[in-house]
Image (cartoon, rainbow, N blue to C red; front, side, top):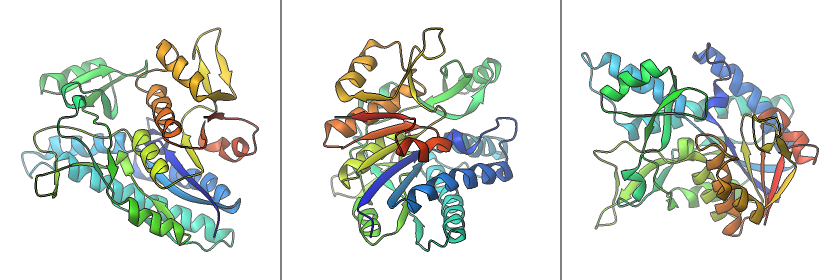
Length: 317
């Protein structure tokens, strides 16, 4: 059994690499490409817990709901989260298993539908900030706004709907995930940040009622990585390295950051966009502050090179 355990967070938007072709066949292409890079890690001795985003996919299901509302009942957001955990988990487990088998590596790959406990009084419910669904024109966003959604302009990339994003407190299936990884399985878990649930006075878990909410995938991944003692939290995103002054003439690409530097740059408020890099840096800070060993941020194509120290941004305590 490998003694190196990594939690690898794959972005939901990285499964839709071309906004003009968001259909399922193109998603399969993107998943298979991502799994080639994940298989490189397995081949190099890592046991993986793969987490994934689901924002665009949730948006498509919501839109289908809206278009079909005159014919069939609407699907609540928690069930949409479970649906996408199942569908994206299925795609990842099939593609990764096939890729590993083609290399003569025979490891079980399993997806776990994952619930994440939140506080029903979390202040995030009063201030929706988490983007959901695909990118919109301002005109389309204003139509959703008229229907009761909150919308924001997202990091210069377009408009999106936003929902509450409570802080994850506990990954309910954590023990099962750890049992599976201890046995050498590759696990896909915490899809879309996990399905947010609350606990009633009897100790029963219940879905959130009357509120739109999703948990930030990177925060939930950091919590899981911390709790299962992962050697590495790897956040796979759209850029090869983290940058200061991103998109500006004086851009500065970072090979390494300490925890203190990450906190300083985040506090300065000008380097990391709220809809993209800031939540990733916040997740890394949480992981390292709670005993995490190291984190890495890079894009899928450069994972192997980054692990050799050739690129990517490493963040250490």
